[in-house]
Image (tube, rainbow, N blue to C red; front, top):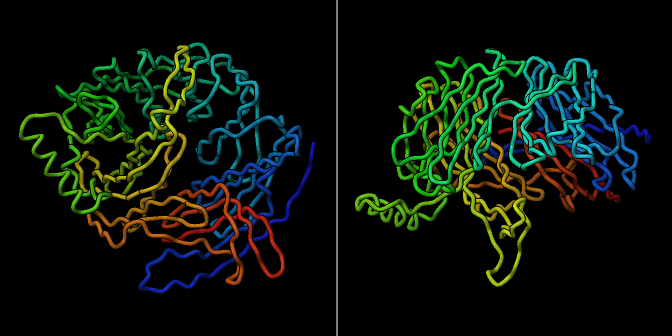
Length: 495
């Protein structure tokens, strides 16, 4: 095995910010001498305001690898560091925080084999074990309750998503009753340690209508309750996030559609205990800022056109695909964040297809383009308090996964941000107020010294951290005084 210890260099950067500019500050910077060609790095925010940095260092042939885990406190000072001796072909997939542990899962070249690692936040001590899960060939989601694993992955036999329970002490695993229909999928998986349950939200569809079902399990994977959520006539519940708490207090916050189940026509909030939708429905026109990503004249035309459609009884013309984020808890309730996107395809004359599991060729999108992200603030009864919008013109990814990070600040504001090369684009939201002059601000990442220059940035990322702080990170090539260096950086961003 290749054993490499690396020097940790902690740099403190004071950034002068003019008061009137209201730019976020960058008070701290950490640089690690790592090369992107042979290093895989992930940054995880821990519940105690610290950061966990995982990195895998491999040789040129990837036949030998070392797996490093290092904790840094809120001042980006090293607290502890450790390594785990596992097979070189392991690649990091998912993590789950459950104080005082962080659980991580790695996949191997043999798609049936998975390695699970547990790290103690306090001491850095590690535990790891490999399991062969015959029924899975990928893992999408991973939660832990009382040391037992709940895993959502792809069923090897039919390609459908499935929920698996794994006891890591005995190695016993079992599929849990969840997905039945051909077009069913998981909308949310929430572990509530205070109430000893895991809630799986399932979106079920027959192609014409869609409904939601919630299955609750205890730590051993035994079914505690099953909720079928009925919808109003003419609506279909598409996706939803579930709140924590007692079953009498739980809410489902999500999207609904009408005729075409690909597109959302609005948002809803419904109490789980009622088992029927007696909650609140908000169509997109009712949201004050949903269309603010448009120019004012276009927004006005769109509103007039849609209002005429409603008056004449015709179906709505606004069709949005919406990708939901995990709920953000606040002092008054919850914030639901969603990204609006559409699929970009090749020129109709060009052929760009893929062979699906049914053996048929299907047209594949060239990219997933975002138009905007929205945030909706609900109280604990499911009443909509405010909504706001973050324009995302030009933001394109190649997978349907969140591209924007959102954080609820202690003073009640919201911030959304995403990285682009050596900049962070962000917007700070203050309740329902929308200021076109303040939309999509740009923050340039600062190097260690003022006279240094960032030549390029590779694989940039940003995560919410704690309080009013985010962490921006990635690889950078920097020209300093007479030398050029490559580093993995972490910049503390303070709003």
